[in-house]
Length: 147
Image 1: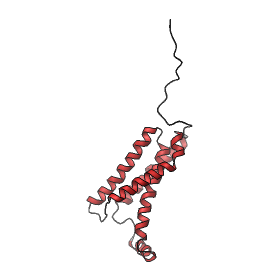
Image 2: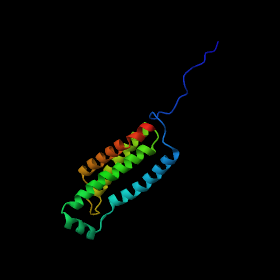
Image 3: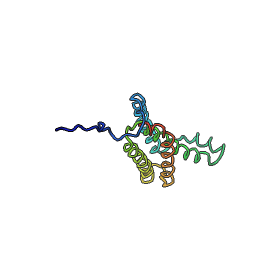
Image 4: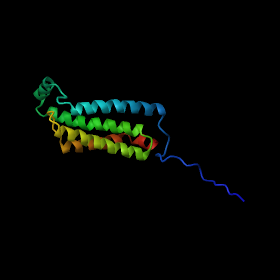
């Protein structure tokens, strides 16, 4: 006598809900790769903002370049994290992607600190980057839950 199982077929461990379309994932993947390359370049470039622009910003408010730089740190990583949430199909993969973004932030700050390129790497920047990653992931939570 043979018994048949009534269990449903196994599915990969994805988040519950409707999956994000292939077109959206493809677009998010391409945009992520382009933005990550540009972001890495600008983070490691010796003078990412031309001196005349810095002078103009300082003429408005002395700390404006600093405030804009930290805001850009947070925003840049938030955008990258949101794209990862859309792009990566599994829940475990999303967590790995967030961890890799934190590692990217720490690595670029480490390189800024140790390479003599006129940049200063700071632990506070890594914390700002991580905050941006968290904000981006939470902002894209709807996609996270969809798959």
